[in-house]
Image (cartoon, rainbow, N blue to C red; front, side, top):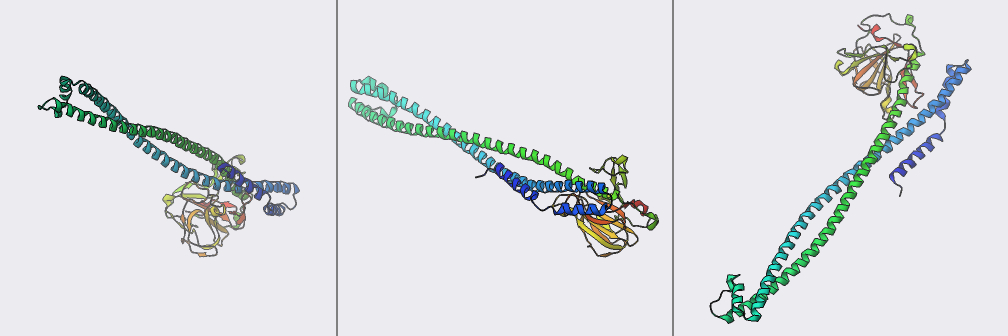
Length: 423
């Protein structure tokens, strides 16, 4: 039978073999996009194709790590169950050992009392036998005075007869005590052996418990390391969004003029937790070219905290042109915008609502100004409950498949500072 570690290695090997022997459809599609993006610049096209190959490798690594995580979670569940059983066995052994210890103490006390009683009975027997055979009346009286049941005023023969009966009784008592003593000694010896066995079991239970705890801690450390690597890969998706957007520009001449109140606020109470623009630090997003020489992060919208109210409203009338669930597309891992909605307002502007807990409208729906469209949440790459609100140039807006993770659809476009149209 395969042990747990062998099963884990075998599972991972099968996963790796399957992924790296699958048809490279994703890489081919990515390379086709490179040709579309750079139809005349062969050097940029070649660089783009190289990036596609790297992205494909990352995608496969992410898939493998996802399956590894499933195996690890199953392993931890098994170990936790095993630890519970070991702990239960340990407590039961301690209880049995305590009961046995009390029994041993009782037997030892009983044996000690039996030995004292036998010594006393032998002493009486010795005296009676000596008096009986020597017909020493005075000796008989001295012994019999030890027990007033033998005092008889009717003569020597009565004393002798009574002493004979006493001898018989003493012999029977000694025999009975000796038999009980032997029984108790055998039982005590068995109890000692059982105690030694329980002590060994106790040590074994403690060892098994410690062994499983050590294994659990090792898995947790390894999982933490893998999780950090995986999160680093996922953060690249965030960088990808901003890289895509940085390549697009806004033609403000074709957009509505800046005017406060053009858009309604998407929340009932405006508690701003993150503004629009360049940041010193924003998660792993440090690839926006125009921020600090390409080293700074960039935030493409406004964040409203949970104190703004959980209900989310449309900033203006329009039509829902996009709706997604990035966590689902990332197979349960929090990534990108989480649950999001995009509304085309028919004036060259698109608004995006990200990190929603719930969505109350669907793609294709016509929306009124101020209509309740969702509820604030913390889905996606988020550190807490909030709404991410972005405004995009409709001409540049699109929903594209991620080059970092297959099946992940990302809303991107040239972003505009939302405060341009808010009060």
